[in-house]
Image: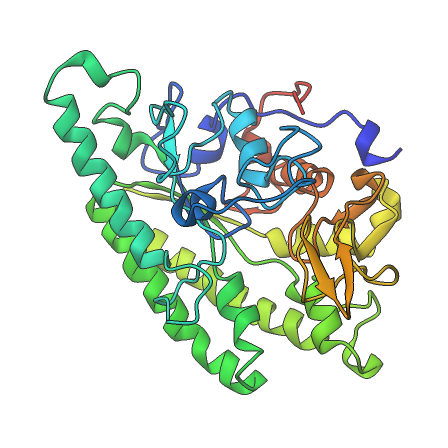
Length: 382
């Protein structure tokens, strides 16, 4: 049966995820979530920061209007929040519409890297900056709490900073972006430096009271439409799925070291819970078996320009209209985005994000796994 018509498990709270700690069982009552990352989990940060906007058809499948997300609808982080019965996370810089940060805050920004941003970076909000923003967020929250209950419905309580879940999905831009200027060997040699920066950020959050860490590894970068177009012109550089082999190999090596770091930090801080989630395996399985899960296009972009086989052009982004070769053209969305894994050549469709989220929630792709601790078998609200 196709995934889009399947019944899939639903986690009511994160209790089952966070109980692998052998020292104690931590109970949560609607805990907040603090998210750090790039466009894979950006719910409006970069758009708010630059004052720019995403054009339709972004957002068409769920929000019915561009929502600051590089997607036709919801992201993985949205589905995970929904599975915890928590509201979608407001981005840190989004001050319009009386946003509430009572259940957490999202610091992720599209284009962000783990390493400090440079003059040519898409986003100035590298991981270190996001961690600093969190420090400001916490400090300001405590200031407001000291003034009484006036702001209670907008901000988390003080104890939520130690009880909250800290989610991470970042590193894709460090690895994939490096292919434009470095050799494969240079990229692999840079991984320890990237992860040292990540470790330093984790330690700063720990010092701020964070105890529950949820780390996504990076996906199969060689299967992104953009990378196939740029680096896959030589068929010998592609694997059996049509993905760029070098990019996927680099992602695997990055993930191995990220996993080792997660285990190291768990051992170093006995009062913490580190959950490492293998997004690479989930997405690789989806791409390799796309038709089994109800998809028709594993690599071609839904929203783009150029037509088959990739429907992607570096010169024009999803929803944009430009003059190319003397002609006005528009990067339009496909008729049915649920047939596609790739939304715009870089990011996944809502349907693909839903699949990935359902696999995360089985617990089978986590270390430590939590499926054996999950007493619920409920219908997802997706």
